Image 1 (cartoon, rainbow, N blue to C red):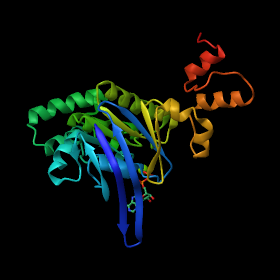
Image 2: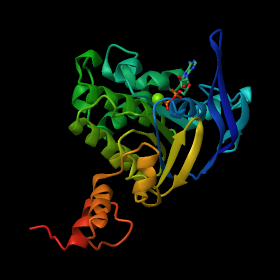
Image 3: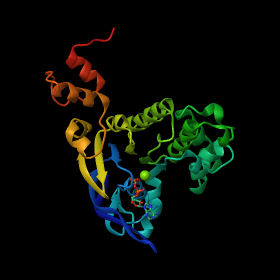
Image 4: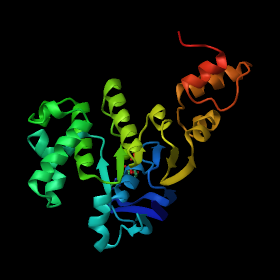
Amino acid sequence: MIRAENLRHVYKSSAGNKVALDGVNFLIEAGEFVAIIGTNGSGKSTLAKHFNALLLPTSGKIFVDGLDTSQEENLWRVRENVGMVFQNPDSEIVAAIVEDDVAFGLENLGIEPKKIRERVDLALDAVNMTDYKKFAPSKLSGGQKQRIAIAGVIAMQTKIIVFDEPTAMLDPQGRREILDMVKRLHAQGKTIIYITHFMEEAATAQRVFVMEGGKIIRNGTPREIFTNVKEMKRLGFNVPVAAELAERLRRKGFKLPPKILTAEELAAALGIRKE
Ligand code: ADP
Ligand code: MG
């Protein structure tokens, strides 16, 4: 379980202070899949870095499995619990060969070499990158690099994985592959925090946090969040295409059930069947 209590983060610099998190509260249960959306600068990445104590609260607290991240003695246990995957795969690659890159975090944990090799092989298999084991990461596509980064996290066997816009730099095919992987990890019992600006991706989570100005301004199921089309537009967000289309049809006077979120639901409401 992860709990944030009145979490605040202020970046201090000579140019002045910037309040990036302004009283954030939430509870995330073990095994949940939570998506976080929000406009640029709303504080998503700052929040992401609080899950594994890359940043510490200016005030307020965040507890990861009951561990207060701001207590120095908890740092290792927090980091063992939380893996991170960031937006830019290039900035995550640390080694010159794929398998060494995946092993990097494990070597720092002092695990014996045989165990490391086993875990690396399993992790590469899980992201379908076994054939690239001996490759130079620089030779890989963005999507493949991102899969290597995910393999690194899988190898660490953390219970929680935080993804900060992992698909932002990928093509649609690469995005689908990463999202499929995320869903698989969730199905295996991992707690997933998934930051994205793709609403269709957020709609596949169990819960969505909407951030604005350093606060979580909405917290609900994708259906609660995204079928409120008018409000989401007012807040400056798109909604999944099916929800949008259903709303447009309703506005034109077509009778449709409320709260349509997916293409399947819209098709069913329109009485269209697959061939
Ligand atoms: P998001 O990921 O939602 O785009 P960020 O968490 O990156 O938002 O940033 C939140 C706010 O904090 C923004 O106004 C951003 O300019 C500011 N910010 C982010 N990182 C720093 C930093 N290292 N120093 C000062 N201000 C920062
Ligand atoms: Mg960000």
